[in-house]
Length: 90
Image 1 (spheres, rainbow, N blue to C red):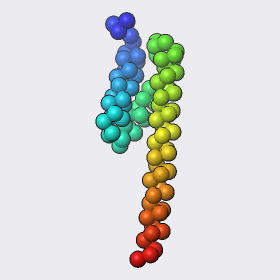
Image 2: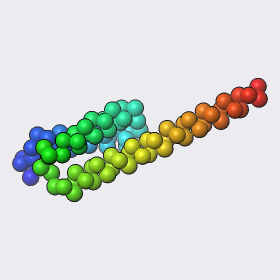
Image 3: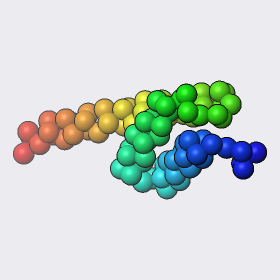
Image 4: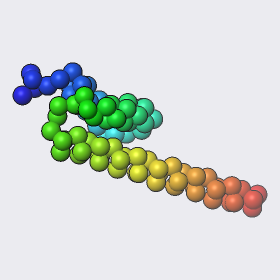
């Protein structure tokens, strides 16, 4: 089946794989950029010939990534705020 995939299909699967490797390798700054690239590719869904469930799952995993990234960002801001409050004791 791999030989019958369109270039758009190959590209989205390749970018999803790259994002996977970055996340597993804890390269979060690079993962953010790759997630943006994947999001852009998903917006051109009409060009894809992958089964709909595959595209839906990739989109759902990307949505989960963005949610978790937002949670981490909020935690970083909260920890910085705590640090600033503790700084007041000096």
